[in-house]
Length: 118
Image (cartoon, rainbow, N blue to C red):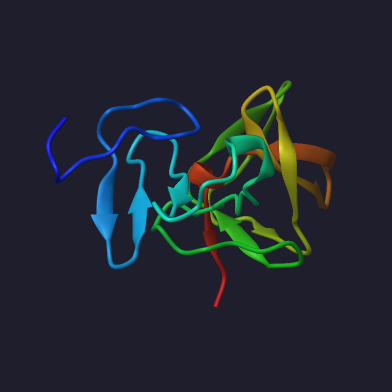
């Protein structure tokens, strides 16, 4: 292990890198400080929800889909506006956004298929 990398305390990836005072895991996006001596379970985890462009998302944001999404026999078209998203701490089948879309009802989306609406 070189001085330029640290193992991630969350996923044990050996590729942690330093950014300012924090260390960052490129595999799970966990951030930590080396001076924290508390076990991982006690460390407050700030989940990062990044859209397709790498912009931080928050619950209540309005987003647009970046591609056509098949939902049953229907399709949510690219560019569909989705208001008041809710970010999920516990993803559902890999989907980390819960929302309602007019004409489709309640659906789950992945952050990677939406972009924050400005």
